[in-house]
Image 1 (cartoon, rainbow, N blue to C red):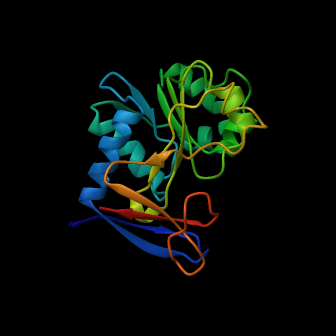
Image 2 (image 1 turned 60 degrees about the horizontal axis):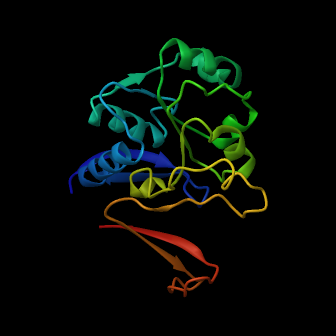
Length: 205
């Protein structure tokens, strides 16, 4: 339960605040993601997120926790990621990447072909992105606030023909990672029955 790191986030309030995460939550995140994303010792994980953004914690811990390599593109590539990142992925045989759907959505078809696993996170993923990029790799939709050590839910591998169907409803954020519980609450922060619209609340064990 000792503090592992302190990181700043706007969270849902829009007001910057410091969030402290403990060792247990970070280790739990690493184990859950290594299994769900199938990260192995021979893999190469892209560090796309800035070190000041909480997603970098999952990239670093997922890679090193599995004995994999961490691929670090220089800032010029990150600044023009839509056009320059695909060549970096090919050159360095990157196998795993977590990217915002807004970036993935503007990339050309085939741009992410080197990846064995693509995680989209940080904002709602539209079915059109799944339809274009889920085939030929494991694609997972991740969700979670900074307070739960980056990620609280992971979807099952998405399928282009099912999860990419624009008439099939929103793309699932999946289920809670290990040792994490999810609740849907109403405006008074009371749990609501299954099927009732509310706000997601996440609690770590």
